[in-house]
Amino acid sequence: MSMPRVIVSGAGIAGTVLAYWLGKKGFQVVVLERSAAENQSGQIIDVEGPAQEIVKRMGVMDEIQSKTTHEAGIRFVDESGREVATFPAGKTGISNDIEIMRPALTGILLAAADSFPNVEFRYGRTIQSLQQTDSKVIVDIQERGKDTISKEEFDILIACDGLRSATRDMILPIDQRKSCLQSINAFAAFFSIPAQPQDRPYCNFYGAPGRRSVGTKPWTEKETSAYLTYCKFDQKLRDARESRDVKLQKETVAGIFQGLGWETDRLVKGMMEAQNFYFEELSQVMVDKWSQGRCVLVGDTAYCPSPITGQGTNLAILGAYVLASKIVADAENPTKAFEEYEKDMRPYVNKVQPIPLGGYLPLLANPDTNWGVWINRNILSWISWLQPWKYFPDLKNVPYALPDI
Image (cartoon, rainbow, N blue to C red; front, side, top):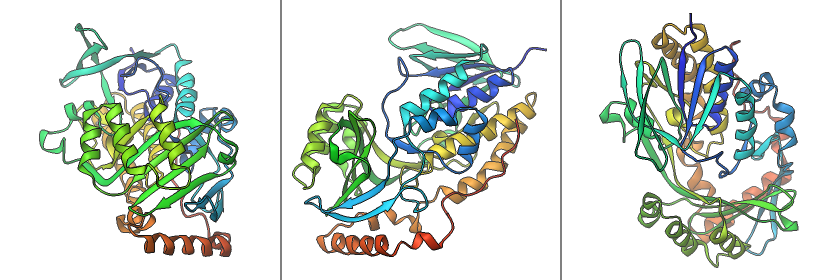
């Protein structure tokens, strides 16, 4: 009997983890990726909790640790660059032990999956439409820049092509396609800039009035990861994002942050020149049911928690692993496998997806007034001095009993 044929939409973190575990078990896996090559954009992310155990089981933990940023912690500064508070990496929950650039992590996971001859990565290709029967998923695949469409049949389709997944819209009922995407009324720009000595070894964070924050994270000796965050709804920023015009996006963001103090002018200049610029309206994904027939959602496509929670990478890795385990256990009955996947993962997602402090964390961490910024800085200074994390267990890593595959 031939092994099931699986198509995965998206070669990001969830897609590569799925491809690895299904490929290891002999499934015929085709992974489609919209980009013409491996995507090199993205911010620094962390790997923690059950996700660490999963990458250990994949045999790639040593390689991941060799490519971490070696960030020492996070340092809060004021508009003149004066240190307000410093928190060490690890137990504080603000900065983590394993921090790595998204392209580096994805590249490691992709190489592991690509080592199986039954796993195929196809770049510059997207799903244009799909149809389901009782036994198959019939998919129309289009290559980037070409009008021709190829039709292929698969036993299972897995959508993990990101927050604004086009494949998700083909799977979900019409009434859920827009409502599942919920903005948290915040915008962020991520990019890299030429490194300077003061960028290491700490992540630097500067909060300014108007709910604006500016940050740098050490990456390599030559490059620093940077981000600009605006925690207010702004129609011009939404219009810029929806336009997909990178020049317009950069100019709109620059108008909000130029001349703000600290090193914002340096960051804005670097942003205007950056080739790996990524801009997004921060949102969460809330889907009533993660599967329809032989199609299933995973990672940000199913339950994006937003960067505010710091859980996106871990949910993608864990969700992909759990889904793979259920498919392997019941390959002939994908509907049942998907139900078991959701039954196991939904309680965990419900624990880690909510934005802390009842959803008010972005507002409380980014005050609108000078008075609010002053209060925040004093609170951070006191917490840094008292070091209360020494007396409490690590509450950020929610445990999960991993199945075997």
